[in-house]
Length: 131
Image (cartoon, rainbow, N blue to C red):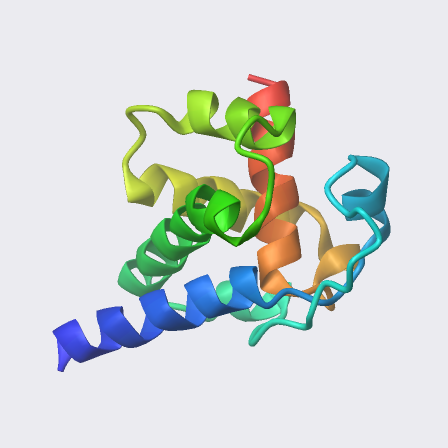
């Protein structure tokens, strides 16, 4: 059962990243959005706080894996924001990444209605720039 839950979360997270549609202002301001639609994801940021620790860790892993896979779908592999996050998380455990996302969501209740993928991206970018 636990393995199927992990597989489900991983597939769902990767799907969220790959088929993203929502265009939050921060994503535009930081240069991620190039005018293509970003699809709505499966969860809102507030729901991350309801996940158990294992599910948070799996989500964080899937979010990063989705970012790392984005060049296969046409995103530039040399995107400076993606490289910034890749460098920053090098050597981190998935539980650390999950904790960064959890803290960001807790610290920003005004963003609880955001797609979780967008909040997760902004959490990682914010943490990597301010470490």
